[in-house]
Length: 207
Image: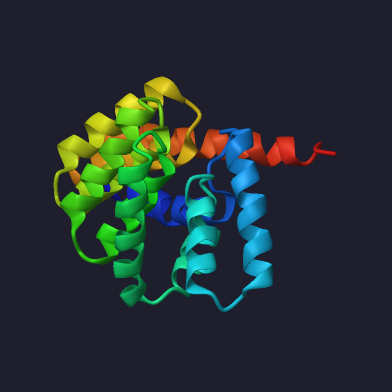
């Protein structure tokens, strides 16, 4: 019975996560600035693969999941090589800028180089050890590689830094589900629901 409940919750929360994104997590001001710039550039060049990719990345590290994914779908996979070449060069020139390995990781991922993506996200953590969304994407890729225990480990670390990261709770719940640890899975899916409910109510009173 509990297994059926878990499967139902996954369907519900997957849909809600795509709509609501990160729950009560607050987007940093510098990331908000990136979003503003990316939107302006895309408006000026709506057919540019580069502008679409940058918009998708700005959504990705502000955890606007559905928007980021929808934008990435508009970028051809062949553009991944351009991303790799551009951000490998920029990372070498600016080794302390976390955005370059973050974006590079997506280039590797879409070239089917999952370990390269993980390595790039780990370089983000070398620069910013508290970057929970780099941790989240590491967990996501590790899960895709079948390394569920490593997904659980990195998600726990992220939640120690930001307990209200809804997407991380969901990822951890899904990892536990894959291992058949349904009680642990359910506790994190319920936490997702609590955070999303809190966010939903708070939005009603925003200016």
